[in-house]
Length: 479
Image (cartoon, rainbow, N blue to C red; front, side, top):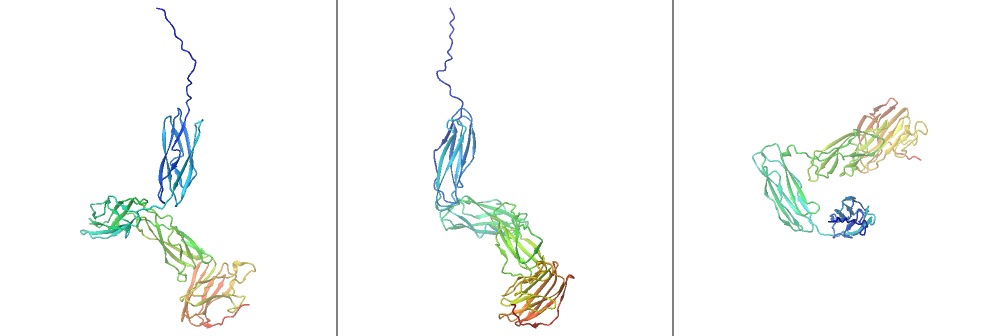
């Protein structure tokens, strides 16, 4: 039998498609359901590759309200990825934006997807715990007592409670909790947990309350028995300067941002108080504000100050106080403070060059001559400054010289006007070179009654208090 050879033609009548990536994006538009701030919603955006080569994709979105779960994809042939797109409206209004999709699809490299949504006022449940989310109790070993608190719905939609559980049932036993209940807006129910300590070492339990509260799906109540044993409370930390140099009354910043909670029940709240201050300080001006992690303290007089910080975690657990003990030291070589104990009187401080009289318009530093030019002309460092003149109640007033000129100076305090206060106890403190060298008090009762406090000698740096009797010195006016 003869052999017949068949030769196939090489002619390409049906061209083979090139191996290229092909971009596909669905849906063509994303429309979010209405969202009530501060909640958010998420919708999927599908990006696929229907080609025969890898598809490289980048996604971008210029918006503070909408966000993308990723900004880059690499898709194999036939692969589809789901990209979450989130909508978090900050307020009640409509929002829109555009998702830009770029790829290495040569024929259709880009796609755009419009997105939109509305922030609306929706009713929400809102869980609250009364009296607090941290409860403490001391119970004798061998006896039992109960933690009692209320679960409230302070929102405007029904609050559905899940299964409430305590994590230490052998010591803290649930007497009653409203598991599986729904609380109408404004309603509440009680929870009771018994505590029977096996020893006096202290215990801690956590009660977890799941609910449909949108911004707090799990609420924690901390039960601390007999001090909690080795329970880690939040820790207050103050970045505390040991010394503050004063050029006059000034605000200083105290930083408590190093405070922390070992259990990470954040955020912390802060409570600052001034626990001790020099007697001459004006107690009406203290902290600004008193409930932030960093505060400003008004240091109006020299001397020892003590400031306390207490921090509380998100569960209401309060830690031990931290204390900042700082010394306010005058930077000027001469610093004199005057204060008094009554609310209406006006007491004045005078620093006079030796040989001059009170109310000498050139050589008396007082309320009518607050910055005289003493010492070397034009050199302000050797000139006295009356930095504070308090005309009604308590003081302080102060006079300072950065570098006194050589000489002798007389210091006096005068009851300018009692304004009805029957007796005024005036106190003067003298600091030389940053050291307190004198503190003394007298009782002034009459208008213009004057106390010669003492004599300062410089550069010896000495102060000699005076035993002169009180005298009446009528004020005169400087022209």
